[in-house]
Amino acid sequence: MQEQQLTIDIHSFSYKKGGIPKDVTENGGGFVFDCRGILNPGRIEEYKQQTGNDVAVQTYLKEKTKIHDFLDAVHTLVSINIDNYLQRGFANLQINFGCTGGQHRSVYSAIKTAEFIREKYPQVKVVLTHDEQAHLNE
Image (tube, rainbow, N blue to C red):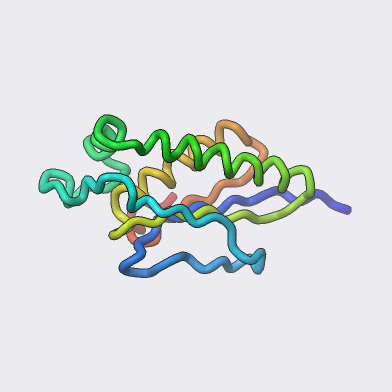
């Protein structure tokens, strides 16, 4: 049996606009994490036009919210599956982060999770897609 490279698709999305991204791999889905329990920087005027990729929003999330507690838990959970998928030769895993507008919290969470996975699992391919913020896509 030829070993396949594990591809991890990470999405940020909006619950209000597009909803949970469809899994096109026929793997049946993956993880969906709801970021709406984190304070929304989008409700603050100075951050409304920014995204979770902007330093000011990232600083707000790090200093004023529990985003890192949330992401620590997410990273622990997804690592269990990634380890298992690598051992079993699986080809696909999808990880989705949703918030109200798909602009601040979900974008930040998707970026930080992609960074975490790339560092911990250099052998996997990570594809990062911001469904509502296409200008940020790699």
